[in-house]
Figure: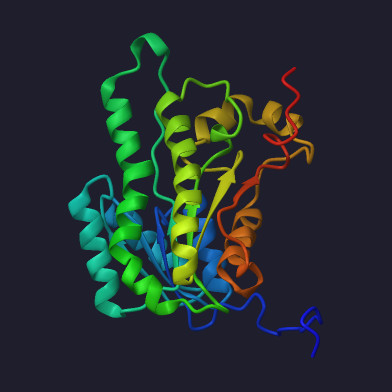
Length: 267
């Protein structure tokens, strides 16, 4: 068979038998991703600071597949390590790590507090790095040359263009996460682990609720596709990055924003 001959795979988008961890998986974008991975056949562990939110999300997601929720506050190193230990207690292999847990802080420049940097950077940037460190042996064991293990970092279009809201630490943390994605991709590729980032635009979520309530229609009107993101838009890109279809992609930052950041004119 010629090297360039196309070979069809019936399981191109199938995640049956895969294990995935989605942090911040009890609401918003994390919940969308967890549902998509479950529907594609993966067994999914979700985490959140709130035990109540974990229990509620676990009940809701259970109709789509095998899901377990673990409460964990990933803003601390100890909790990142504890979550990793609990994940590894079930299996020594992890196929997919989705670093989605995050925080945003909006406040005017003159009043922007030091705490807004510490809290946001701890969760948005340090936690993904800590989890990759702790779970790397399990990712290595799961990955192969043909089907690598996957790390998916959830960044933001706020790291690609300048948003109108005063979210200094959030935008900076997500820009750093995009670059961390590229650095890790270069290092971990030879170890059969891909590392990519998704940069969401406006999706309905608790983090975006106030903004969308105030100017959601205006934001949608600025998008070339003239709408906000939907659950399937986020679930779809996550499944693509986790399945065989995305096996040859690493170091990429994929905007999922209806074209807002990549077609902005500045006017």
